[in-house]
Length: 424
Image 1 (cartoon, rainbow, N blue to C red):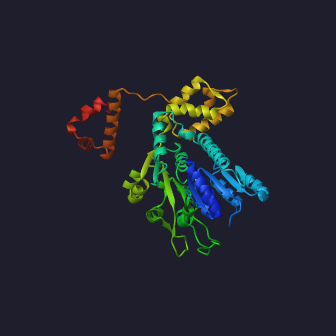
Image 2: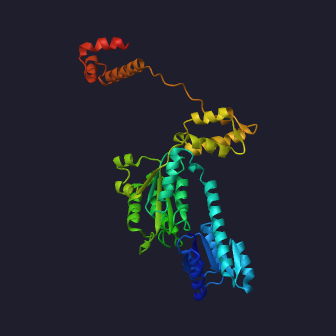
Image 3: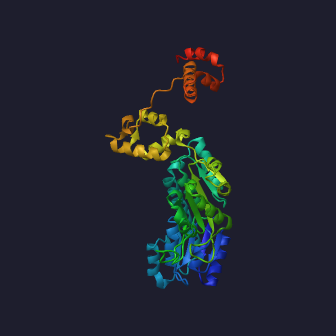
């Protein structure tokens, strides 16, 4: 079902349009002003009059397209305002219709605009989500889970190694949520100084501190009616963790220097490459904050668990160049500790180094793996025992009888074991 937002200040016209489109099977939201339209739920297409009280239809086009460049907006105009309609199209409107307009014409134009918007969003998705290529079983499971939880309002915690695509997953969630018409605000928590936490996250009022010459919105208010992505959440200091927890629990923030709290409507997506359970055990991360963040946990698999995706990603990054078979094998042998980010850098470097249109193994310049470790059980066990005997002697200050007791056998057997291990 197509979700349509109609913006029209003439009540009779608005009611007529709503009745027409609902009869055609549209899901319709109706607003009388641009300000009300900006606060409306997410939609697939917008139909707006140009002459509105307050912000004009052209202003509305600009605001909507800033939020979502793929959102199709059609404008309605009278015969005397064609020039204004042209201005609206320059501002980003897809089409304009002149009043009066035939019902079948306006319905057909809105349907085509919705189809065009859907195609544009899909094109952006395919172009913008390289880390979410889903050829492997591991990545297919993750993408299916992200699709499932995107419409939910619960907080999502993305975990995984650096470079596995956590930020892209956050964008994926926002773009497929009911909040996609709202802002997606991305914050690197590791880059926020502890002393500035409140001002950065909750904003401040003019005069709150030296240099605060005007009111400033924080991350929470910037993300109102949208999504707030908190990357590297484990980097927050304990004081910041406590303040963030309170904001998540109350959905209220108070700007620095402000006297009143403000309600915010924000969905939180957090990400970390740390083991937060270990941080909790060390008492460096709040357990209550962890459970507040981990409403919907999602683990992003490393590239070494996604060999099918690795080949597809490498080919995409290399285009229009091709990758030679021996180079593809070398890519599959590499461990990729930096994951997709490392793969992209390696391929881009190889593209610059390649003298032809084929990337070879030499062009990749991957580190040569060292020899495999010796797996002889007797030899490895003897090496381990020798190290234990040396450590026992160090702890015993060179006294063999005491070293024997530390190792758990009678001192009279020291000579036997020392000879067996070649320590005499």
